[in-house]
Amino acid sequence: MSDILLKVVEANDKLQWLELSHEFDVYIEELVGSLSQWYDRNESDITFLEYMNSKIAKKEAIMAIDRTSTVCLGILAFSRNNNKITFFGISHKAHFESVSKILIDYSLSQLDTNKQITINIIKSDAEIIDKERRILIEYGFKYCNSELENGVPVDKLCRM
Image 1: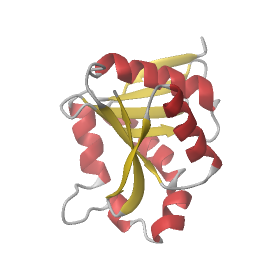
Image 2: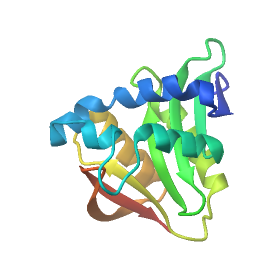
Image 3: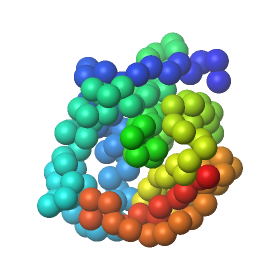
Image 4: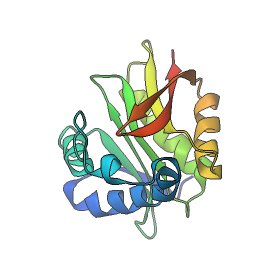
């Protein structure tokens, strides 16, 4: 784990964040076919670019990078106002457990652990999505309900 550094996501990191998000497109396409609502918008959600800009401006996104190559290993974004993890992505090329634990530990230090914390995970049985679910359960998250996020079916997990 000493080869992993955390940094606050900045404007010049948006391309890496977008590339990381695209690693998960195949799972979203399996659920809904089109990525347009996920990235572009629908009547109730902002575009992914607007979302990234908001998280960057509020300093509510953290990136795990490889200390030696500065390659993005994963990103986690959160909302202090809503006490929610709003983006959780670990690169398929990274060591999932190490990177996810560092990012989740950091996010929990930024959120109010005395109140409910939520996260949405896409409804997929892909191995990496299953890993996300399992690591969140290790951290005390439990299934709350199902909903749609930007037109994509998700499971809402809650932690008290």
